[in-house]
Amino acid sequence: MRTYIGFDDTDVLDADRGTGKLARWFEEKLPEGCRLWGVLRQQLPKMEGIPYTSNNSSACVVVDSEEGDVTDELIKRAVDHIRTLYIEGSDPGLCVVNQNNDPAISALMDFGRVCCSRRVSQKEAMTASRKAHLSGHGGTNDGIIGAAAGIGLTLSGWSGRFVEFGRLRDYGENVVVRRFEEKGIKVLSMDRNALVPWHDHKVETLGWVRPRLWGGIPVLPVVNVGTGLWRVVGTKEH
Image 1 (cartoon, rainbow, N blue to C red):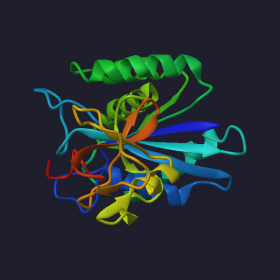
Image 2: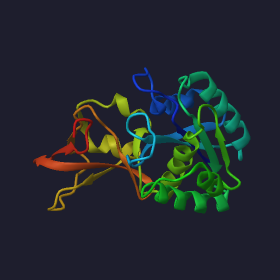
Image 3: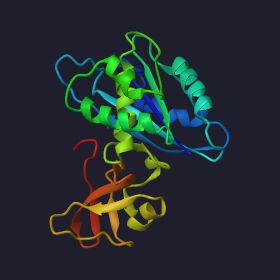
Image 4: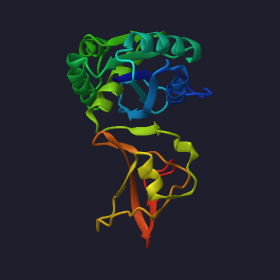
């Protein structure tokens, strides 16, 4: 069974850790029989009237379980995780839903899209969450908005950048396409001439491997820079 765990607003400016790190570190707290599928950063709009720390992004942790429904245990551990690691002065929020919570899934997907177009309220987040878990853990509790939106956008299968999938930070500067494929990452050409990366081609990562969630799977967009040579797009600097 797959469970989605949304975290938001757990940090403050100039903190030594942000919500993304807190979300990635939750892997260490998973119960036996659970496996981290991935962690996604979801970007929300910077608009007048919307409070945010630095970039207005939230994080969604996607967990697979071999033991059936472990939602209650994941909620308990996620709450403890926030209480241990959040920064005083932040407004943490948590949202948790499993793949079988159909009413919440549909509403959360709609909510995620709405959050990308206008300012929304905590009440709207609570309405969208329905039977899913939604809770605030400090300050104004505004983090419940981003936590719910992050899950909704991830559920759509077409939004977000992976900040963890396997061990993204372990790849070197030049990686053979086959290695990404073996790890479940699709390498996709963004070249207008529609060249196709072949298994033994190389990818210049520039030290920044961050696949996108496209079609429900991790996709690494690249451009052709030479014969059998590709380069990632959307790096930290670009």
